[in-house]
Amino acid sequence: MKKQPPPVAAAAACKRPKVFFRQTWVEIDKSDFHFNLKKIREYLAKDTKIIAVVKADAYGHDGIALAKEAQAAGLQWLAVSSIEEGIQLREAGIKANILILSNIFPFENFQVAIAHCLTPTISTMTGLMALEELAVKLDKKINFHLQVDTGMGRIGTLPEAAYPILQKISQTPEVYMSGMYTHFAVADTDAVFTKAQLDVFTKIVKFAKVNLGLRFIAHSANSVALFKYKRSHLDLVRPGLSLYGLSPFKHSDRFLKLKPVLSWKTKTTFLKKVPSGFCVSYGRTFVTSKTSIIATLPIGYADGLNRLLSNRGDVLIGGKRCPIVGRITMDMTMVDVTDVKGVSLGDEAVIIGTQGSEQIKTDELAKLQDTINYEVTCAISSRVPRIIV
Image (tube, rainbow, N blue to C red):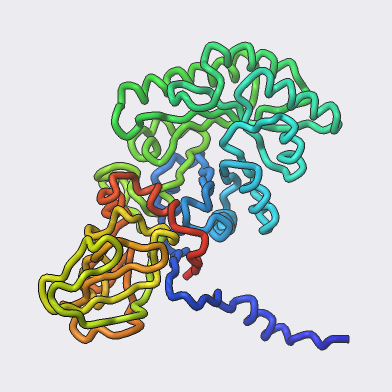
């Protein structure tokens, strides 16, 4: 029989950090995640709970790791975008309730969701009847959440169609509507439209609870609404971006001051001193105007560093901002480190995060790319290791 390692050695092996040889990685600070969670909890009414949105690998932050942290912090609900994401969490040992925020089709896939104890979203009478049929077949009561489209225009039943669906739900003991929700389209820019959405939704919620006697949790607030519209908090709120310390809208720190959970780092792997008039990278889009020191970083657009940052973005090396020069390539990026005193191979380069007194925020990269901070972190490739610190 093979000799088993002693308990201490086994525990040490479990805590061994990820091994990677290409010096590009993302650091996820779980203490900052818990800080943000605490701040959001303090902002809510005592009876309002949190459903942590960990879809899309927690917006590129490592969905499994942060789902475990959320569960450890006592959260009873998590939200994902697909059955596949839900299965990944279950296989990782997550026991919390998991809501699938997207429409499930074909309806045969309900069986897969239920087999993994995932809570599906229902948006139509047809979907409800398919779920009822499955419940009868399995001889099992199945719970779900009903989504109402109050103005997002994506999925969800229209308000006028919600009433007959709710009537059907009240007459169908084989299924149980454990929740109802809606989603805001312009919570960051249009208070009038957002309040109108909320009014429509709360009217439907009241009808279901008062007129039909249904018992369920209602939720509507994403990160923006959580900050700006306390009336939208209801039974649950659905923070995603704010849990990760990213700004859901400009000046959101006036409401809550949160901490970015993600830092993105690499290291210099090649240095060369070049003369004036030297061309860098594809297309010769950058030519040195003086004798310069150019550093090569093992990071490129295959890692999620967008080509739009070519000749526009900066990285932090030696506590200084160093401009990206030439086009970002698939696996490598060049930066001008001429002004970094004592620069050497292996120096840490920060893509997102803080070094010394300098900081590069996700919002800065988003602005340079004419996009949103969500996309910046979601775009970080799966080939970049996530290290929990």
